[in-house]
Image (cartoon, rainbow, N blue to C red; front, side, top):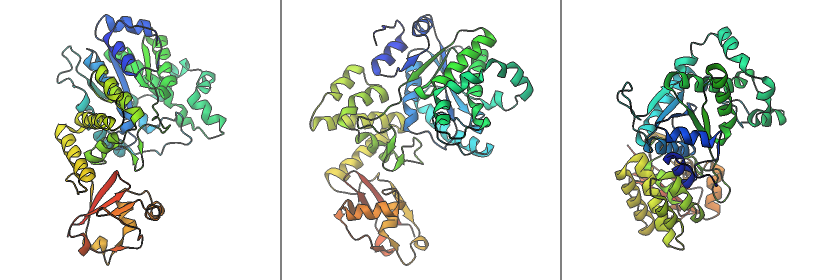
Length: 421
């Protein structure tokens, strides 16, 4: 990018690799240079926890606030009832209001680790706000909404958006319910502009069409100039979607993924991604990120440990990061068990007359299925208590689990199983 911004926020995010597109970069730069700007990112409540795929934009909000601006985290209590069809091959399962509220409760825990929320929002300043779009979407009058808002949307234009077009090109059904999603998200931007003077919506590049719709609607209804900014959709250097691990989604809530497993995910970053991830996911100065990312051979492992410690400290705290590093050292360097390994506790009744070792690998998440576990044994990738183990037919009794049994899949993934009574 050749543009040299005047505002600190744009300078930081361009330098660190956050910027994919912006609707009017120079005008937004001017607004950011002239004082505090309010921006939001929306999060639909489709699961009980956010995952690593959300972390890029949470860090974007963090930098937005650190550079003197006001972030809004918008929880999709209303839009989750519809479901975002963007680049999906099928309709999202519909969740009940109670499920949505429970998911929002789970998601909210994470944001306070990264953002400083305002204690008294009547006071000026850049304390973050958390809002729920159910506030204005739940009680909309359908006919009034169609007349006041729906008339500004061209179906021809909506069909041309890539997120919709790709679904239709594959001749996959797009329900009328889902088709409304982009109108509701556009309306969110209008409401946040009207209520809080919000000038900017940010999001992943898959949200570009929805963001542009909100800008266009706000211009038509309120005659206000607002902006959109997107981050790149990240893939790892080996082409995988960022945030996916062998065990599935990398959740941010400790109840769904232990701090040790989270730490280990970052420790397993490939050499080629280390410098880039340090810039995106930590607060370390850019020069330090580049220095660490340029290390080679065994030295790059030290950079990966710094990456894992910094990212884990932000989310789970310094003690959790230190415990995870100590466990990793115990497990890998000394072949021990470690205090912080993910642990599955089974009752004597669950174990019964014995439980197969294959089932234990599945229960601990070291294998996705019994078939995958058996393949692990056949290929020599399974260890029990640090010993190579090829007998997939082993029956494990409650007596054998009086002391924790350490299971390993390959060199980097470990778990403990113990009988709790």
